[in-house]
Amino acid sequence: MNAKYFDTIKQASAGFVAAVDDLIPGYQREANADRQYNADLQQQRRADRNANTRRAVEAAAAAAKSKADKAISEMKGDFDAYMMKSHPALPTLQALLSAGAQLTEQEIKAFAQTKNFAILRLLEKPSRGHIVAPDRARFDNDMQELTSLFNSLAGYCGPNGELLDTITARNGYLSPRVNSTIIKGQLANLPAKLAEISERWESVQED
Image (cartoon, rainbow, N blue to C red; front, side, top):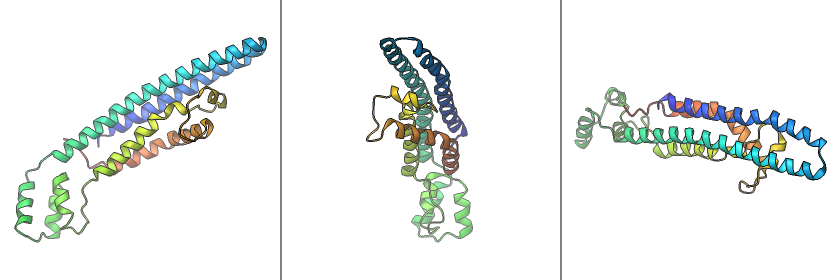
């Protein structure tokens, strides 16, 4: 799979975290300035600050999600193209197997070097499972894991717990604090996760 997709996702994640973290100093300055106002104005200023901050976080999350979704969609398209792609050696292998030929280890390796999806599928049985075609279901699970993370980005609040007050929606039964902590951990682990996924599907090339 083309590394550019994973770079795009990594950059989208890093850009989102930076955008949210950049909101914190300004948020804190405004919060400190509240002390000079009476209780009613403090309450109004806090409500306005939270509303503005929430809009900024959601806008940053939407921008990151859009970039990630595009990369994920293109990866799925490349996988589809890879699965449908033919190869000049495919008819030969099909004919050999249909005739009941017993492939040698050298022949199996030679056919496997094509990395063609259909050829790898046909080689799974004669290789006794040593050759395995890329699993589309597992690929979709990887893509869904990435999609789920970017769908939940707006729950990230950075290092400032006060931003938790800007969250009104709940993610299932998780509190905003727990949810934000989980997302923070997932974002921190994302580069390693992307490297793992990239390595798993490096043989999948649409061209």
